[in-house]
Length: 315
Image (cartoon, rainbow, N blue to C red; front, side, top):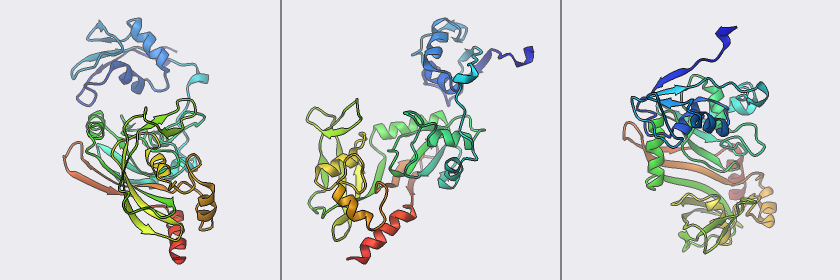
């Protein structure tokens, strides 16, 4: 009986976790334990660092000894990782386009959220954790919309996460998306600077002078009869930024259920378009360990290529 009883753990912090807040460290280590319980055990002094009480915002340092108390959740409140036999989970294995000891890069399918929540049992990160049960650490470096396909970076080490997110903050990461938009995009429209404000109730984003500064750079790739294939490069990283900036110019993206135009959906649907035509196609960044310049491309799925083939046949 006593062998099954959870025991106190003493964890020595290495460089991978140095600089992380103790509450975030515990959230990652104590899987499925709610934040409220994490704060409660810290506040009660059950979690200690070097035998001393600490606050939730304490940043752990290399060499710290963290006392992690036993925490057992009722079975009914402990969500499970998704079953690796599920089709949506297993298919992600074939979507991995790069992996080493520090990071993993996924060509995320459209319709797969990056993480669970809001009624979704699981997303890409939960599925990858199920596929990689031996991985000590797997965390999203950034996010892309559920209906957007393409490149998604996942860190496999805390140090990699810190260095990659620093590059995103410093805007040294270059991201390029492909989008099919309505009408003829003007060659003179190369940059859109328009502040974006998110409605916290319904998550709809609008151009608003009270919003956050937002910049997207655009380039025409191919023109069709009633559509344009463009390359979009977001300089800032606002929610739905490319989609709203495209709408703002009068050229909404095809099959966009929030910011689109039904007339364009009807037109593009004739060529087989049935999902948001927005694909994170290329990313350039510095490798968090080797300092090598990484230039990663992700191919579009076949159904998007078929749409372009159909549009070309009508030129």
